Image (cartoon, rainbow, N blue to C red; front, side, top):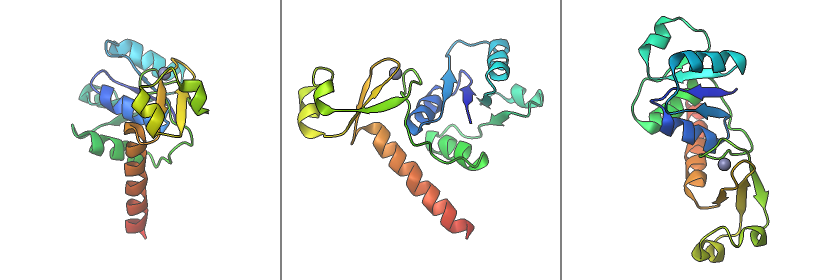
Length: 154
Ligand SMILES: [Zn+2]
């Protein structure tokens, strides 16, 4: 499932990308353009804006909370999603690929190079991510949440 987030959901868009969901986000997008893109690219609309709800669009999820954790969990549970295998870049939505440590030696701070072993690089903008960084903790948190919610359904 692919998404497009409205202008109020920039943080959610970044988190969904890190979790691996293909998510478009433009801070200055007009409603008209957002609807057009959603239709053209068959993307599910994520919105905090109740007037999208009133338009009665089927492929639209109204996000209830301002809290980022609740927002992420709402998207995943309401739409019954599973985490994709590959993460995406928080900045540009590009797919992250695993790279050898020596390939990124010039792209990360020295302490990161010395202290971490596993690295991924964005195929879009070249941004480098490493194990132990923000996105890995986020992924673990969501996996924990999914485990617990699966348990409570049984
Ligand atoms: Zn990128």
